[in-house]
Amino acid sequence: DMEPRNLSLKIRHIPEEYSLAQNYPNPFNPVTTINYNLPDEAQVTIVVYDLMGRIVNTLLNKEHTTAGYKSVVWNATDDRGTPVSAGLYFYQIHAGDFTQVRKMVLLK
Image 1: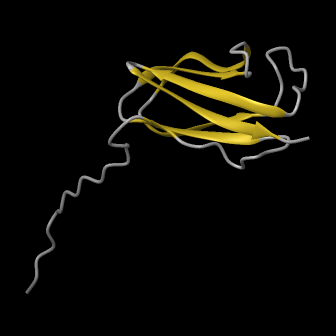
Image 2: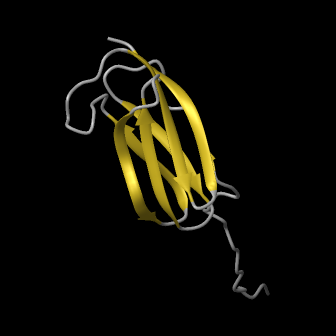
């Protein structure tokens, strides 16, 4: 006779490390998604820059974000909502002590 047992399985739905994924689709028009992983809660900033290093759009500004698999969408506009030109852009994440930059291409 088998007795049911309470099995306690700890499944980790939290990433092991910080990371910033390549946006998709890439190249894109007019919208792209940026995925990032947080092993701990953090203040997250994600900024899009142009080739000259100017801030194009601040997607997240020191947002208190829980640990997990996260994403943010960019609709190829600047901070004022104006569509930006086609070309190469950089996006950067700051989360705690973690920082990373990647490139993306907007086609028109």
